[in-house]
Image (cartoon, rainbow, N blue to C red; front, side, top):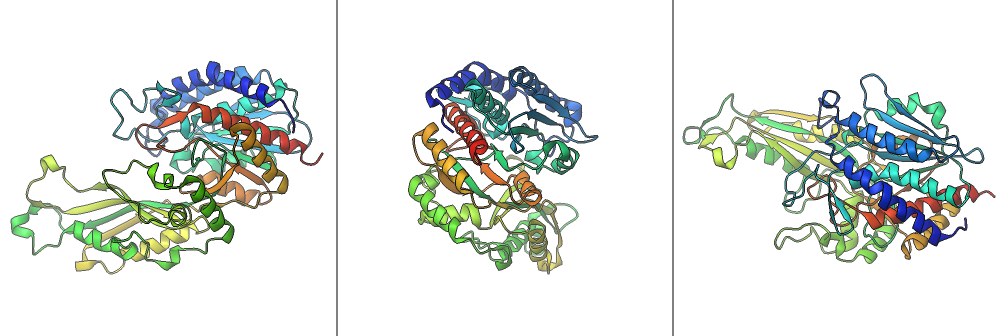
Length: 474
């Protein structure tokens, strides 16, 4: 669809500067952690505060879109969703998705910065949730307002903002069923919760890894015992835990040893990984805050991209049973509990992977120690369907218009449960999965930031794609 790109850029830029950024600043102040990290989220009321903030902003803006409606939908005992309908032309529907719940605080923020302390530094807004992905609702509405400002037609659009994504979207299936008649059957889904390899062009996510999370506990004593009395007689619970992990992972290379957890990588994804590696160069790994002289797990950039997107990888992300260094006496500890995060290839069944990992870790414990494996969060990833010719051309046009460079395709190492859910429900639907989480933006970690220029450009790109979607059959 042809429209005045300079006018589009000016409209979207003004909306971001005057209306979006001030609201996201207020949103960052709200510690609305996802329910997995704040079991008392109802009592604390922060989620309601975030919903009210976004609801008020959205109601004012969609008043300019004839017939648009907004509902805050609340099923009993579940996190709320913001559901917006914007009428359009024709019988098709576009679904635009984002979430407003946040990851927990995390340590390591710079002095003067913090998860609930919005700070503008240059053109980057620091604080938890701005990029992951509080901006999504604002960007989606602004894209539609930009089309209206130029009289550009689009299909009916539905904007769905959930509040449980960082907890695995366990509430979302109930809302999808509850709202099924109102959602309809979207022919295009736009997800704004993903990443970008750089801030120079539009990045489309082609796949998302699955995830198994849980704990491994090894207990050898009913209480701690002086290490001078017990060591050499009672085995270390930490050593046994380390031994069990070595069944699953080669500690020298990080390669997962269980062949059942691998899949055949599609040739197209290998080619896309090669192209992405060529575009990024050393930034494949240099974008990460490597400490000192730490090196990546290999020097083949394409293989590093594939490791991150299509191969299983294990991380130990937490521990209990270990005494702090300051308080540690000479005691042989009674137990060690490790929290595990096992990333899965996109097409690996999450539940099956959880069963495999449980079997590998839990059988035949050394010294007959008490071993308990609780892997209860198996979720399957997502592999995008092939782009229709019209959408491939639209994405290319959108990237050139908004960024001045070609689009790039690459898998992401994280998970967005909603994508797999929608892929199963609507197998013929086209997907555009993108986002603003680029180098050093550090979602989930300290010093998360939203790159404002990228937010503006992604908004422009979405406006282009929505316009092209309407025109594709005309």
